[in-house]
Structures are given as C-alpha cells and as structure tokens.
Amino acid sequence: MSYLSRAAARWPDRTWCITPREEISRADALRDGSRIAAGLIAKGVRKGDRVVLVAGNGLDFVRAWLGLILCGAVTVSINPKAVASELPAVIDEVRPALVLVEAGLEVGHVEHTPPGGQPVPVMFIDEAHAASDEAVVSLDRPPAGPDDPVSFIQSSGSTGKPKFVIETNRMYTMAGEGFAHWLGLDDEDVLLTTLPLSHLNAQAYSVLGSWGCGAKLVLLPRFSASSFWSDVAKYGATVFNAIGAMLEALMAQPPSVSQERARVRLCYSAPAPAPARHREIENRFGFRLVVGYALSETPYGLIVPVDEPTVYGSMGVPRQHPTLGAVNEVRVVDADGHEVADGTTGELELRNPAITPGYFGKTTESAAMRPGGWLRTGDLAVRRPDGHFFFGGRAKEVIRYKGENLSPAEVENAIGSHPAVRAVAVIGVPSALSEEDVKAFVQLRPGETASPTELAQWSATKLPPYKRPRYIELVTEFPLTDTQKIAKARLPRDRSTSEVDFAPRRDPRQDDRDT
Image (cartoon, rainbow, N blue to C red):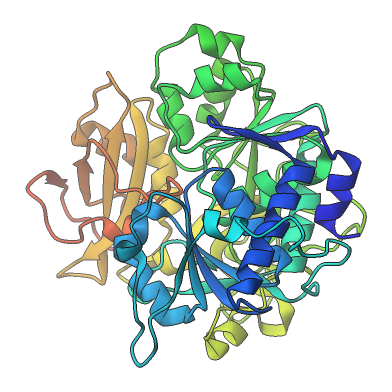
C-alpha cells in the first residue's frame, strides 16, 4: 500500500483536516482526490504532465494536490496572490498541460500563451471533481515510482527567470514519515499551520506529516498575529509550524486570555533565534521552540532533538529516518570541497536519499549542485564536537571588505542581541574604497528606542572593527517573502538619507589594534 492509502485505511473516518469553512477525513479526502484525478485524466492529463495549481490555503488545494499525485501529474503551485506577477513566467518555463484553479478566480487572469506555443487550457477544481463516482483512480498502487517527480517548488528568493526544484515521491514520503518522528507527533496531536501550501514546508511537513501519524491538521488561510492565539485555542492545537518573522509578530502582541488557554507544547521553526531571544519566546508562551534546518532541495537537513535539552543557537544535528535509520550525512567543507575540522567555518553539505535530482530544465546547474552526491547548500556553518551545527550565513551573501570575507549572520547576531532590536538584516553595499561596505537595516521592537549611534556602540563591544557596520538605517518594516523571510534582494543598495554613516574603519591588516 502507498503512504496515502495506508494512513487512510488506518484512520478512515476520523476527522483529519479542519479549515474555517469545512473539515474532512482521510478517506473522504482521498476519495475526492481520486475523483479529481479521474477528471484530470478525462481532460487529457497524463503521467508526467506538468499542471499549474492556483489555489490558496484550503481543502480545494489539498483535494486538487492529492488528485494530481494520484494521476501521476507534476504539480507546480502558485499562490493566487502572485498570479499577476508570476504565472506568465511559470507557464513559459514549465510549459504545463493545464492550469487548475480554485473557484472565484477569473479565467482571464490565468490564461496565457507561451512563446511559440498554444494557449494553455484552464480548468476549475470543482469541474475536475465533477467526475462520476464510478470514474475514479485505483488507490492500490501509486502511479509514480519513488524517484518520479511529484511537484516543482519555486526556489526561495529567486529573481527574474524562475528556478524550479524537482520534488520526488521519495522526498515527500520520507518527509512525512520523518516529521512526525522528529517532533514525536501521534494521533492525539493537533497540528496547525498558516504557512502557504504552495511551499514545501506546509505540503511535506504539515499535510503529509499529519496524514501519516494520525494527527489532525488545522489549515488556516493566512497568518494573523492578532487572531492567532484565539485560533489556537479554538481548534485545540498542540503543535504549530512557524517561519521567519511570525514569532516576533506574536511576541509583539499584548498578552491575551486565548494565549493563556492555549495548550501548545511545540513550535517548529527556523531559523534559530538568538539564544536569549529563544529563551524569552519559550518563557512567555510556555512551549518548546524546536529549531530545524532544511531546504527545498531536501527536507532532510538538521533538527534540535526534542528528546534532549535544547542547545540554544544550534541549527541542530542530522535528521534521520524512523525506520531506515542513519541515512543522512552532513559535513562542512572548504572552497575546494575538503572536509574541515570542527570549529571551522565552511559550506554545509548534505547527502541522503531525499535529495532533489535537480532543477527543472537546468542540467548543468543540477550537476554542479550535488557533486559526488553531496548537496551544496550554499549555507555556511560550523560543527561543534558534540555534533551540533551553527549557522554562519549564506555563502553568496558573504561581504567582501578589503579582501576579507565577512558573514552577515555574525553582524546580524551581534546587533540582534540588543534588547531593543526586533529584526536586523545586513548586506554589502557598494564602496568607493573597498569591494563593499557593511550596512545594517534594523527594526526595533514596539515601544523600544535605540539610535543608530547606540547600536553602533553596541556592535563595537561584540565585533572587531572591520566587521562593524559602516551604515545603520532604522526601518519600520522589512520586505518579506511569502514564507515570512526578510527579502534581502529587495533591500536598497543605494545611499539613503535615512542611514547614518559611521567613520570608515582602518584596514585591520594595517593596524594590529583593529583586530
């Protein structure tokens, strides 16, 4: 039996997924997916065809996604809010057989003809579901093999021409099996998510993770800090997934009766907050904040084990599979690909059976991404002797200052430890005297005050001179991706009248006192 049919057989009639509009059992969800699969096949969709799915967080998305899996199609998901900006480029790149949309979307908004091609047909999810009860797809065996593609996920932070990560049947199955194991979930848990279903986290961890362990899934259309705790209390959530700025938005809310009534025991989130902030979050909300690390290229990265004391600041240790055992290898390498000693910063690499075969249509880039089977993450890290890994920044974000490689993450951690700081983003900006200068964009916590000068003085106590930001600019908000990460690519590189320019520093190689 497949992963989907196995859980549906074990918990056929028990409520599985709950939304503000409706709820459904596993058996009914799979039955609806089977009918949609039949409708898609009748429309001409075949195994391996790419289908663009445009739907928000709700059961329409879930039913359609299951239907696409059951008929062997490859799902390319787009958030409905991004149709105008993303859909034409997505269609041009993946050349889908069909665009499948939720009710309420204007067909004219999703119609597009790729260059040199034919108009891509559009079908509503309800229309696909209208197949007769007899016209269903067999659930006895999965239509796709373990290494066949199930979906394409648009690479986070990509700009210009989209890049799509190929997600396979094996990747999804191992993610669903693993997530429940890593967090210790069972059929008594209620897992809540507000993260977009167009991304891997909600698909692999929330949908499939809850599906396979018997837990209920509460699927909300969007994140709202003001109503979050009332929703948690209403649905009895015991676990929720968070990303990026969500926890800080919750920390900025005043205490509430709903928060006090909540029975959440775990929150799974990334990236790791500063250790002091991590403790503040746990102390205020009373749950354990479980930090993990993964990528669209593999759901098997790192996690801080829930059955051990929290190691604050850690990205975690290698995630492993509940029955296959130690299948995930993790190492840190230098620029030549040689493994470095513990305590040395280098690029984090992963090797496991749940790594993407590559990027759609990008053979050369796919081969370079995983030399010798090792996935190059593009992230810098340090491994400690106890096996925990600590984030060192993005390799591509490294700032070049007079021949020195500076990690934005190190500067962000230093400034972010100031008690008045809510969030900080550090980038390299053009410099007339060196390759780049360091600039910090800083958002303060509500009700707190701190001047750029105070923040500069704070960083001076924690960083050597050549790592301190030359420019500091206070901002009221950051541009965010739809997964609530700071969109650094959208931060301005040009000089600003709002920034404070601190005196240029001496080159550390010219004065020993600067080191």
